[in-house]
Length: 138
Image (cartoon, rainbow, N blue to C red; front, side, top):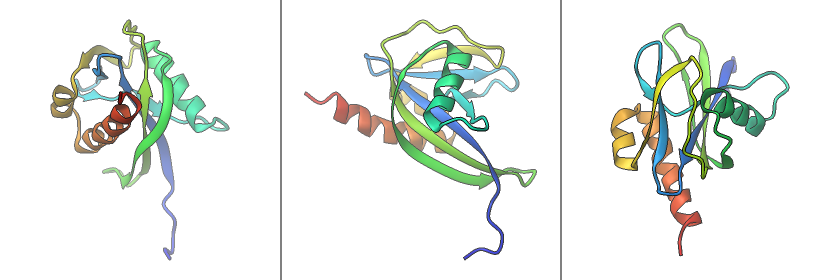
């Protein structure tokens, strides 16, 4: 038992697959780093509603949110708690319109996406790929 529970900001990100097995990544305008789209959950918002809102706000995509695939808890350099949940998502849409938070997007194959993302996001992609293959198995 811990003496003091971690107080954390909750963020959610979508591993969004297109029908051709490519994954959407977006580039942050602030530092040029690539990431999976998503963001913070608002007060009194359900988890999937929060992710859907963030995906629509950032990309205009409204994918099917299938299932959570990865979670991560950490403290940033400032000592603030963070809790992240990554979801496997699917869409037939390919047209993206970015918010001001991002300045570029790419639909890339899994291997290319892995090389552009942080380790936790790479793990989320790997876990989402397992579900994607199960859903699309013939």
